[in-house]
Length: 553
Image 1 (cartoon, rainbow, N blue to C red):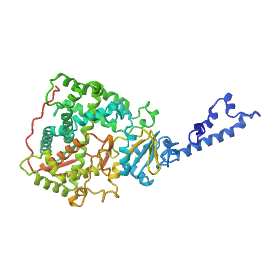
Image 2 (image 1 turned 60 degrees about the horizontal axis):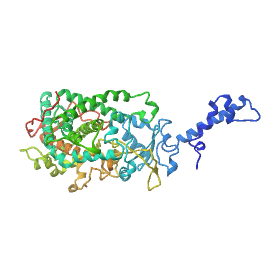
Image 3 (image 1 turned 180 degrees about the horizontal axis):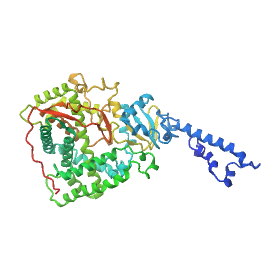
Image 4 (image 1 turned 30 degrees about the vertical axis):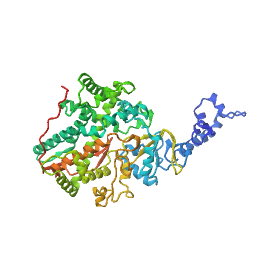
């Protein structure tokens, strides 16, 4: 068995100790019966220092960089960049667009299947290959997620997204799958989603009339998304302006904190310095979140149970071993608000931007809507199954602009994972999938940088692709046991919104605000410049339905 003190990569520092020890203990390392003078020993000390530096440099030059020292001995070395001493490839993740930079590095190192790199002291691997991605995401060795500082402080360690694999996580998964994301529950909330959409169309029309045509679309989508999740989870289809503003601020701040690439997650000694003020900002946000969600829980406790129970009522009704403490309920409900608010809005915005740039696609989609829905009634969700081109448009938007190009939250390897080619991902490694690289790979997709929904239509020479995690060529919601549980609800919501927006309006670019597809990567990949467009009414929207009122004063 190798002695760690004499390892070529792990024990070099022992030989440098004499350089920093007091005179009395130097003899322990350099004992001489001839009593060599201290002056005469200095050349030997210098030689040892040079040897220590050389050993450190040899370790740094290993594939993957500084965090991979001593880890490749478990299998065939995984190729990858060495990065910089101490920080590794942190700059590649924190400057510019990480998914594009990592795709470039994988191509440079011939490491499409698996690439090793260092994020400070964190050994990391990433794959840009759908087959390896499937094996990785479905493996029980990658059932956990690394818990970021911001996620821990924002209570997500007790919510489904970051809770470790085990009985508690399985309980949360079962509850959400049965009582929130089951097909019958999604269908039961269609009336509310239709009301949200009607309100959104009315607000868009009003803003267009006030501004002489142009509309900033993102804020309308975000408001509809907020009402959608509040209705689905809390039974509140609308909140007053002050509550909406407060909630919007909390969600935006949470998005910023969780989406920020925090060097202190990978260089633990930086935490005391708090360079991004993650700790202080989380400390200010969490009391606001607790107060907001706790008020909702208490309101549900005091009201009479009705047939129209919502997700809060479900959590309160749990008994025995399934019963959740209030802090756990707050964490779970906060995660539902947080995760369900912006992703659908941002994906819809990307889709509408592509329809503005590709008017022939918008026209073809309108023709399909006119043929199936007509002009005398409003679109229903059961119409979506009869609208294959609509489904193809949304799939193509997911391919071109996956909301989480690195699948948002990484996985943590809990046991050594051996690949057929001899490579081994050691326990403790953070693993990522570069979904953006896969969806833009010319070996997988013909003309990958062209927006062409027909690629998903078998009737037009395309192929059927399941985006729900079964086909890793396009898996924007992830795959395996950590696949997004709300994928069906999110997909249905985006399809409904796009269909309604295109059915009732023809969308033109704003002369003063051209469409800009420049990306910015936060927790999700979003348009750096929010979309401004001109809606021309083609089919009058139905009158606004009055949604349920908020219990908040």
